[in-house]
Amino acid sequence: MSTVDITPADAPRRPRPEKPVAVLGGGPAGLTAGYLLAKEGRPVIVFEAEDMVGGIAKTEVRDGYRFDLGGHRFFTKVKEVDDLWHEVMKEEFLKRPRQSRIYWRGKFLDYPLNGQDVIKKLGPFELAMCLGSYMIAALKPKGREDNLEQWVSNRFGKRLYNHFFKSYTEKVWGVPANEIRAEWAAQRIKGLSFFSAAKAAFFGNKDNIKSLINEFHYPRFGPGQMWETMADEIIANGGEVRMNTPVTALEIRDGKVVAIEAGGERIEPSEVISSLPLRATVGMAGAAATGAVQSAAQGLRYRDFLTVALVIDGDDLFPDNWIYIHEPGVEVGRIQNFRSWSPWMVPDQSKASIGMEYFCFKGDKLWEASDEDLVEMAKREIEQLGLAKAEKVERGFVTRVPKAYPMYDADYGERVEVIKNWLEGIGNLQQVGRNGLHRYNNSDHSMLTAMRAVDNIIAGTNHDLWAINAESAYHEEQQEPSQPYKRVPTTQYEREPLVESSKEEAAA
Image (tube, rainbow, N blue to C red; front, side, top):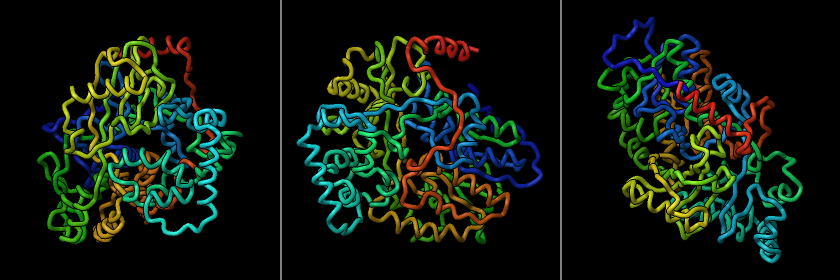
């Protein structure tokens, strides 16, 4: 795989014909902006605070095992994003089968729903009760829909909400479901109604609702491969990617960012594209942001999470890409199986490699627990769920991911609006990406915001970045672009020579 060749901090900088565009953050949105600007021959510097690119979509590597943080399927209804993925990854972009299940009341339910499996696991009585609850919700007036509980109950019925939404949602967000705004549910799960799910379960997903898709796309060595390749291309086209270089201040004067402070250096940019959290951007502006704006930014909340990756002796524990854990008796919220994402993620065919995902707040008991204690907890819980014996776990690795999810609490909309109004007065600063816009975007829409920001700079367009994916529609609903993808063999017999070749490539 390629690695990012970073210009040393003490090396002389090449003379620039004009001031560079400063891109703050080396995640999917920031790298997309840097990649497109460098392709156009524009001087650009991407600043990344960490020692790896990719942000929350990076791929960790420990002892040859590759770990995806959160599970990143690549699918989109936006053709230009899809085209960009292929332009970057070429033959390294694979098509993978999707399998996922829900662990509920000690049972594993197939997801997408399978009619026979639903009847077997829920039983005809419970199915009838869920249908009755749905009919009541469908017939009665909708009423208020301010929060997730109201929004989901109105569309699925109270019984399905309590079974399949309440416990998992509260585990993910760490607050009661009635404190999460309805906008989050509208963005993430619109189009997957009781009857659309039931129809897909019994008659197939003929409408191709992407919440029910059975295939997705994935870089061979994990999503980090895409971001590392992008970073290499930025450098090859004359741009810079400065790692371990956090931006610490924005100097704003007369409605313009006139300088940034990064790595102890003062740099004067022509334009600034920031994928940093809104809270961070406002904080770095100092006195240029009023007290009301600073207060709004400090009030924005984020949900963090951590992954405990376990290497387990023996074959794959389960065929799923991931399993949603709707079980209140364990802390784990979701479990990834990394070989099911790509066989190249796991270097040893005699081992299983999984990721136990725990949702938390930075500074709470889970976040502050030692790596050793977290690995021990993950070992206990994998056995409690009946997936593996704790004694079979050979080693474990912990990765903490701050600010993974912008929270849609009761006051977030008003706070974001205050910050937006302030940003409108800064002519050469554009916010992009998930945390940059405080919107729960997937990678495709995060990248699209960066594309539009680059258009605004190069073509002089006036795209409203806040309007991208702002409609209450989950982006898994639409048809996928027609595109030939390379397939990966899925049986162990077929995989073995591929894994051997990947070892040779890694050693080269």
